[in-house]
Length: 88
Image 1 (tube, rainbow, N blue to C red):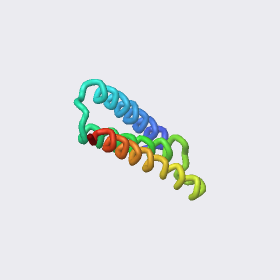
Image 2: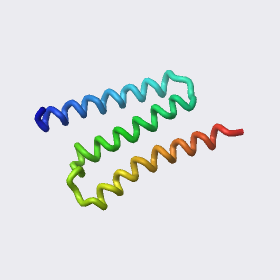
Image 3: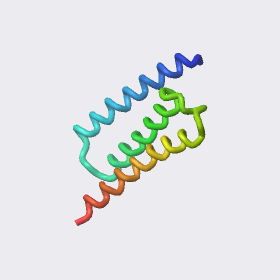
Image 4: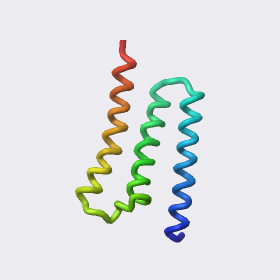
């Protein structure tokens, strides 16, 4: 598969995940399962954007790791805020 085909396929996947997330947010009941799907999607989409669209796959190691950390910290912050808001 060429680079252009890979990027096109990933773009379509990201669009599908975004539309699926919107549908999930509008129709699903809140709960830990929905939250888990959302944060895993958030992390996956972030990694794909970093590696394939920002082309940081071959960038300076520090810059790449800082960007990757962002997409692990944000889902973790989402989980923590959800859990803290769910407790009485």
